[in-house]
Image 1: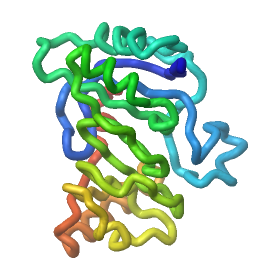
Image 2: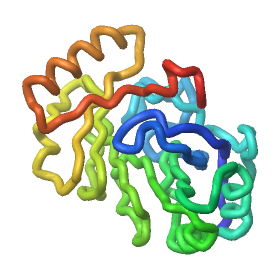
Image 3: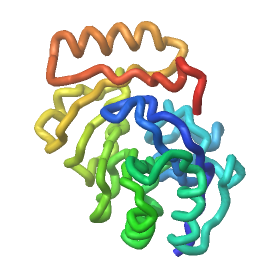
Length: 210
């Protein structure tokens, strides 16, 4: 299959359990919970997404005809030594496109592979770090991984409903909106009252990096 990619760039992971780590982000185009068009936001399953995943016009974006071609494009952005290479596959919804062939090609290029997914699709074998970020009432197909990161607060979504799932870490991430300060206070209060949950802050937005 070919791969539609919005953008590929080197940055520091800004949130969750690997915050601060250098990583190449590979943002796939497309999502199954929102078209990405503002006129469709009100009817979307996920109404609060703030990411542009439409098209292939971002930095280093495009259509890649083979997994090896995409792996080479990812590797071209890495600036450090061979050890410690990390690619974060994100979107949109990366599991619409990330398959075992691409996983094999990225591993062959020396990368550990992390994925940031809404969890509605089961992850293929071989991914090294799975982060699931549940959205509203979308049914989860991926119920295990390294971290569950819940954007908080979401209307009608109680964090406790996810605590039985097989994740190593549970994060609350304040929703980035005009109410971000209040959302952050609410997330802090919840973590203090429920210490199984940790606070995840989008540090890249404070630092002004991608």
